[in-house]
Length: 417
Image (cartoon, rainbow, N blue to C red; front, top):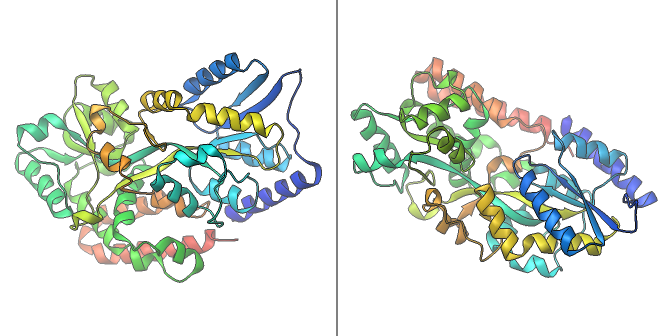
């Protein structure tokens, strides 16, 4: 229902836009453009870039908007025919909806569209209906995987696992040594998505999500093995995994109470804040026993879009081009502990040396939840499964089948065009 409401909101907003055109808020002789941003973490560096751009371009004033609950604010503004010049947002279902209802300019012919890492360009096109256009320019990306304690791995001569069986063997080795293999934080349901996304992305067939949208396949057709792996991982966590939240789990991992933490690149700075002397790194979760199939789960965290028919598009494109210049792009990934979606920009932090080469080579899968309809709460459904599995692990098959039925039912309810 939420998806239906959003589509209606977007359609109304777009209709109003076509009827009356979009106005910017020029209040002086300067050309004014607005950047609408949905990330709280990158506000400071974006403000720095804006100040530098305005100094070089004194005739342009850049208004920066980065409100809490940006998604709700953006939808409300669309209803009021108040679309921003530039939208800085992640590559998820919001982008899909904006692109598919015609609220964004096609940027595929712009010069700055030619330097995108091919895998991320393809990932962006996969999110939209019109495959011959490009409505967003991917800028920065993140990754999910296994954060590991390098000192423990070295102490017990553990090599980075390349297959699922090797990963489970690593868990069993640490258990024999009396060390908790995985610090799990399932009290915060979203962390189960960090576990499930790589498994589903690697193990399910490539067409599952597109076929699921059209009803040709069910999630139950492709997610059995990933759910089995979730249940397997649950055997190798600390006892109170269901009662441990993200913040407490990060602290416990930083104190050396477990060898691994399955989450994303964003968690590494939190671990390092908790223990600045701890040496950690991240490897891709190897869900398959076929090494060639294992990839890094990595999604577009920031992409730039231009609102359809907004004023001052020359200046908007010039500002985007400024952000994409090598110096700014490199500073962004260094500051944000991110990867770049632009060719030639490298992430060299020692904690990411396991996955950086894979990302630069385009050996990536998008987060599977980026393809789920708005309002579909995969994390909550995974949390329900984890609770059932925690109570009755002997009923794994039954628990998986019941959960997949719920997942498909919830998908049908949310998948309303």
